Each structure stands twice: as C-alpha cells, then as structure tokens.
Amino acid sequence: MPPERAKRRAASQKLLALLALAACASPLDAAPAGAQSLRPGVAPPDATAPAGSQNGSGAETSGGGDLPGAPGLGESLGKSLETSLDLTPGARRGAGAAPLAPLAANYGRPRPKTRLPKRYPPQRASAPPPFSPQNPLPPLEPYRSSPQARQALRLRPGADAPAGYPPPPTVAAAPTLKTKPKARVEDRPYDPVGFGVGSLRLTPSLEASYGHDDNPNRLSSGVKGSSLLRTDGALTVRSDWDRHEFQADLRLGYSDYFDLQDASRPDGTGTFKARYDVTKDTALDLQGRFSLDTQRPGSPNVASGAQNVTVTNRPIILSYGDSAGVTQKFNHLQLSLRGGYDRTDYEDAHYSDGTSLRLSTTNYTALYGTGRAEYEIGPTVTPFVEATLDKRVHDSDIDVFGYKRDNHGMALRGGARVKVSDLLRAEASGGYAERSYSDSRLPKLRGPTIDAEILYTPTPLTTVTLRGSTTLAETTTTGASGILIRTVSAQVSHDLLRNLTIAGTGSYSFSDYQGSDIKERSYAAGVQLEYKLTRSLSIKGSYSHEHLHSTTQGADYTANVFLIGLKLQH
Image 1 (cartoon, rainbow, N blue to C red):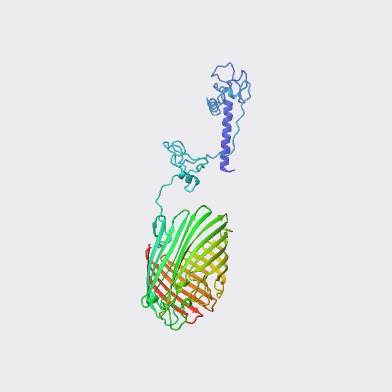
Image 2: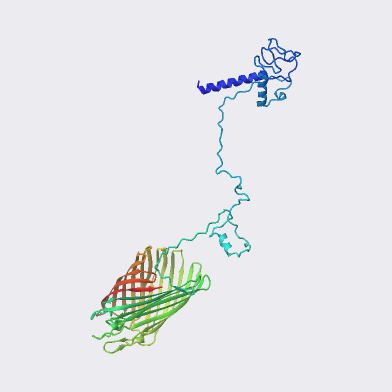
C-alpha cells in the first residue's frame, strides 16, 4: 500500500475513534430517570446518588460521564463537538430520541485552494472608477469626410440642426492632436507655375536658339547654307472656374538667316476656346484660331514656269477665323450645332526678273456649318457622326490664270472616342469629302478622309503620341482644282531625369494635286533634348532632317537644321 494512502487511512480511523468517544461521553441533559448508559459495559449511575459519589467499580465519575482515568475528557470532547457542529442540547436530540449516529467520513481528495490573480494595475483609493461621472467618456468626434462633419461645417455657430440631420456616430473617437502636415512632394517640380490675373492662370515663355540650316529656301539646286537665330514666344492661358472654361495657346516665331536674308520668315499658330454652361445639360462655346506660314520658293503654287527665274521672297499665308455653337445633352445622347467663319490671305510672290505673281486675287472667305451627334455607350466608348457643309468665295471671280475658284463642299465622317484606361486614349474617324468648283474645267476635289489621334502613356516617364489627318487645301496651280493632303506624325517623349527630357519626332505627308499629275511625298525626323536648370530656365537642343520628293522637276529638296538655345518661362 502506498505511504500516502496509509497515512490518510490512519488519520480517518483516528477521527472516527474520537467521534465515537465524544458521542459516548456527551452529557444526557434531557435523558429520563432510569435511562440506560450510552457506554456499553458501564452501569448507569444511581439517580439518587449525590454528585461525586463512586460507582460500582470504585471510580469517581463526573456529571458529564467521563472516561475512567481521564477526568473531564468526555465533557471537553462534547463541548468541542457542540462548538464545531453547532449542536445545542435541544438540537442534538429531543426527549426519547435515539442516540446520535456516527458522522460519515470524507475519503475524497482535498480540493486545492484557488488563488485569484491580483488586480493589475492596483486600483488606487483616490482614483475614481472608470466611466464614472468624475471620469466620463471623451466627446464624440465624427470623421472629417463623414456626412455629419460636412453638414456641421455648413451650420452657423449656435444654429439648430435641420430636420433629417443624421445622428452623430456611436463610436467615441478621442480628439487627435493637431500636427504639422508633411511637405507635399511635387510630381513635376520643374514645370512653370505662371502668374494669376483674376481667375486666369497665364504662363508665358521666350526661347532664343542659334544654329545652322544647310538649305534655308528648300531648293533642289543652287543650295546655300546659313547660320540663323531662331526666336519663339508663347503664351498659355487657363481658367480656374468651377463651371465655365477658357483656354488659349498662342505661339509666334521668327527665323533670321544671317547669310541669306531673303530666306528669313515668320511663323505662328494660335487657338482659344471658351465654354459657358447655361444649365447642367446646355452649353454655349466659342472658338477662335489663326495660323501664319510661308510658301517655299520651289512650291508649284509659286512656280514661274520659266527657266532661271526664281522667287526672291517667301510669300506669307495668313489664316484666321472663329466659330460659335451650342451643345445639348439628353442623358447619354449629345447633340452639337456649330457655325463658323474663316479668312485666308496670300502675299504676292516676287521673281528674280522683276515680275510678280498676284496671289492676293486668290484670297477667300469660307462659311461653314457643322452638326455632330454622339452617344455614350459606356465610360470607355463614345461613337459619333459629323456632317459639314461649307462655301468658299474668293475676292476675285477669276484668278491670275483665268480660273473661277469659288466652290462649295461637304464632308461626312463617323468614328468613336475610346478611353481604354488612364494610360491609353484615342479618337479615330473615317469618312468622305468633296468640293465642286464654279469653273467647269476644274474637276471635283474628293476622296476618303481618315483622322485619328492616339495618346499612350506606357510609364509615368514615357509618352507616345500618334496623329493622322486629311486636309482639302486650295491651290493656284494651272489645271489643278485643289490639294488632298494626308499626314501622319508620331512623337515619343521620355524623361531621363526629373529635369532632363528627350523626344523623338517623325512625320510623313502625301499631297495629291487633283486635276494635274503633280504628286509630292515628304518626310521629316528629328530629336529634341531639354535640360531644365530651374522652373524658369532651361537649355534646349534639337536636330531635324527634312526631305521632299515631287513629280515636278526641280522641286525636290533635302535640309538639315541644328539648333541650341535657352528658354525662359514663368
């Protein structure tokens, strides 16, 4: 038997023995006269015997019935049991009750004492309990972008909340400490910031470049190069309005050839757009444009037709006009109607033999109207159709070669505007256009038209732009009614550094002089490099190569231009 079990058994036996002795030695307060003794083998005392008399065995007994040889033991055991078990004489047994039964022993294992963890941190007597009136919850604070916060900003201090004002949030947010905001990192730290004039933002720039052109007049023979000074001025205007819009882009340039002053020439372009939103679905818009260019001496439009007679100047072509329109939206359907006015003026050409070609007789005014309808299928695709009617009236009924150049035309095209993602956007259309002339000797100028523009940004540092266009232009060439010009161009721009940009350009053009056998094909390629020192100052360099092949004898040319300069902008 294991030692622990033997010890527990011995202790239980001792406890039972003590309980039995206590039961036998307990005083019988309520026992009747003549009752038998509870202890076996012991005669009951005489009821009439005086206290302290000896029993039959000659042993002195006490009133509590003590054990022999242990005076007062029964009385002490009885009192201890009464105290521990709370047994009063009346509660132990009544009159005539049976003797007390021995108490049952508990043989189970004692339960281990469980110690509860102490409170951490210990609660201080002086600190108030949490969430008490002395220690309330922090005030509720709605998020800045929540409807409650936005509505509270529109309420006047002290004013009651309007009906239907949403209740504050049920989550308590501790007031945050005001910290200084971090400095914003600019995506384009070298771009110009411009200056404000009212609600308009103006960005001017001035560029001066010095270089060399090996064929200033774009001739096929008698080529003479020259150094040049190229000057460009530009202005960009943008509005800062919530509803309406205004924007303008203007540029003027001049090429001054030091060794060949007759080749010096100006050029420039400009556009402006204004939109006025009458309602959410109705808008009025106004557009204006101008272009300034010159004709090269080898162009068929200024050819003298005589040998050894050349053009000594660069005749200027100035075009300008404006248009107005209205746009109405019907849910996903948008309708536009526009009318416009254009004016084109030509400068006379002067020849080396002292004669002149009066190109001013071909000045004309154009009136046109355009209707457009587009339907938004989804956020990525918007198809459209467009129709244009126009009429061109020349200042002189008959030009210098005896042709009546007044004409009217029409153009119809359809396409779609596509936005695949923020990285790829495109607009492409195809159609047909034709022009009819007052002179029966001039055939119709007609043909299919293709126009497209694709803007692709494969990475934040690279931008690819593709463009294609079809133009019906006027001409003074004998027997030709006009020029059908198709042009395709591409440009790839990449930021080598945050302030260093390289760009490559290329273009191809085909010109068909309908009514004659003249065909011209030209292409150009170039590279540009810009290093920005600051927001206001940058260094620029460029190289371009041009080539023209024509069916007209003596009209081909090749030219190379190198330029390097500074650009100032604000």
